[in-house]
Image 1: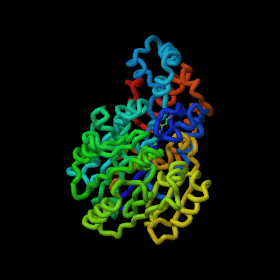
Image 2 (image 1 turned 120 degrees about the vertical axis):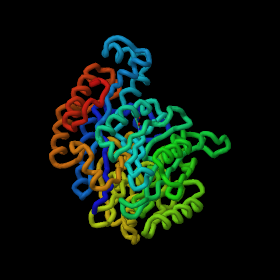
Image 3 (image 1 turned 90 degrees about the vertical axis):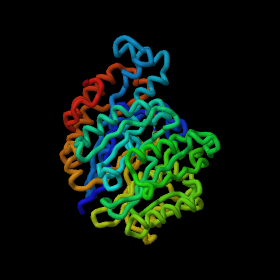
Image 4 (image 1 turned 60 degrees about the horizontal axis):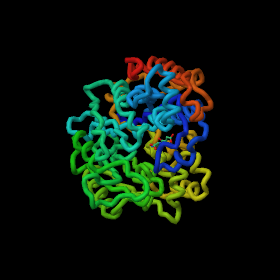
Length: 448
Ligand SMILES: NCCC[C@H](NC(=O)CCC(=O)O)C(=O)O
């Protein structure tokens, strides 16, 4: 096998906390103000990443961002020493302080949209960091995301890094969470599916009524253009606004694809039959394999159960044997309807033959499941060899990162702790050491 789909998981940062910042994300709102455990969160993520590496996949890690983000707080007019900035923000505008302290870059499915070299006009692998403009706390991620991606995929012969899209609601972009690729072998041309929530420039288009649609069609189209994708291998699908209003804030909460499998809830999309026919037709023209649509009906799994367990925020991975496995959060095993469905899915005669459960509850409580925690990067062997080797998971990196987490992370953090000036010192000390472990250079503003 000389083609791989690598997963790059976001290392959870030292300020992981529950601040209720994401309107439309049910878990984030339900857990607002609960205490978090950053150390456990980071270790849960590392366990999942190590296990997927041990299943025989290429697994990498992406570094977290610097938080509290004092630069953004200063742009907002808070001045003085670092401790003054934190104290003033905590007193005058605690919600702005919370937004500048989130460890939300851990959800690397929102870091960027990635098109593998077999799909693009110049046969390079293309990355566009997501602008994440719908949420203040996430809109401050893209510049550092770009630094981290460039330090990880740091060879311009193979990797092309774009600037994030214009920072305006018309171009709301949430990255790979709204993008899925279907293909035969990873190294062959595939179909790129872009799932958007609303059309910014069409006042007559259907939109959700209660919660925001974060991704626009215009953003998805701009990315397809700049990655040089071919129309015959690109599909734009609108998410069903009714499910966005029930807490499906990204498409990866309701659908996931891998190679020749599309796994989705029957209510996931608008104009489902028409869109499935387009997928089938384009897939048949491009990919030399049977395509499996695995549609989950509402009478087996309700939208509410899908949102609370993250059945569709599972990773579907292809093992070296060619069989596929589902990587599910333990929350799925704890819900009888969802567990029954997962027990059944491995018997349906599709490529999916195994289910593995992982405890990622620290992330789940903020609305991020196994699939949110990873960015998929399909690569050939030459491209894998060009990746910064210090970011690739192996026993040694796993041990080093666990020791690093034990040394620097707290095991309890409440939002009242975010103004503690000691937290910025701890966070910078940890990240400075991390850039050496991962050989990233100076990716953070405090290092520049
Ligand atoms: N792909 C999963 C993303 C989850 C993320 N949650 C958050 O940002 C919650 C942060 C908080 O509420 O503290 C989001 O909604 O974008």
